[in-house]
Image 1: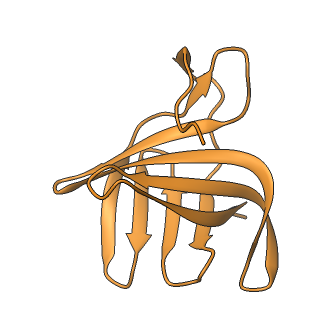
Image 2: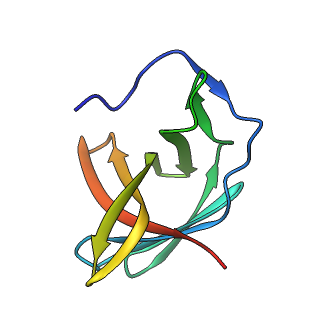
Length: 111
């Protein structure tokens, strides 16, 4: 799997707020524009970059998250995803470069 592709551009198209849950249901991620909240079970607040997209494409969307002691890269794809028996319209891959792991989550637009 290739996590990065190039070239990227900052998107003029804003992302709606998203609520995501891990496919195993043990952590949750909220993406709310410039802020993201990860609950696993403690809550950690991250600053988030504006969405990055490959030039000329709507998907995938990349968001970089930064906290004092942790950095994550979120790759969002418009792809049906299943978690806790529910279907979600967006799949997230969260890369933690400190451990070189990718965790999967399913996301929906906050209503």
